[in-house]
Image (cartoon, rainbow, N blue to C red; front, side):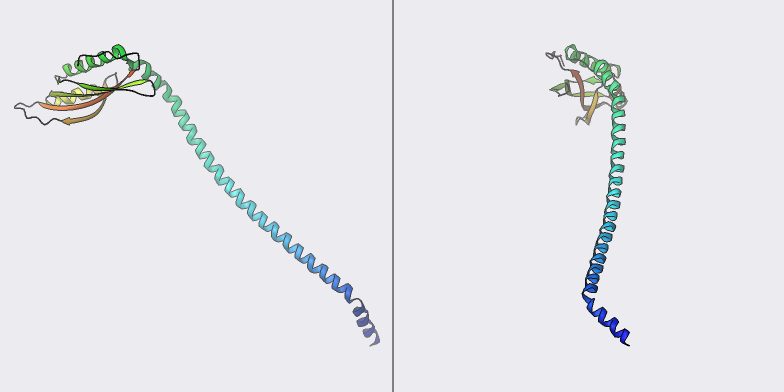
Length: 196
């Protein structure tokens, strides 16, 4: 029993050393838990950031694809725009007179009578002059359809904006329409006044 007592007394004397050892073990456990927790959180954060970056990359790739398609379409359309600018749109002088002559020719070929035409001019930022014209035309139904069809298919690029039946009674089968059209000319020094 004396040995057990000696052991207990020896332990009592070393109690301070055991307390320090216990404190060191607790601090070590706390540091280990903190570092482990921090590393686990950092890994979760990095995984979340990686997923966010992948999503962002996918969106940017879709955006790049859309922009590439738009650029390719713009490149393909550049030739058409150039052809429109050089071949279809004529200079203002004598282009305005030629446009009225073409409208008269199309009306004559379609057996349609064109009344007095009024028009407005506007210079656009792209260097074109936009002509908006309103004119009454009279004829039977099929002739009017033929006239409008020929206007829209003309190489001059007439745009038929509005067609309205005029309120006028006639005794024959003739119909009167009020047409609003527009076309474009290249901007120049002046506009020739056409007899309209």
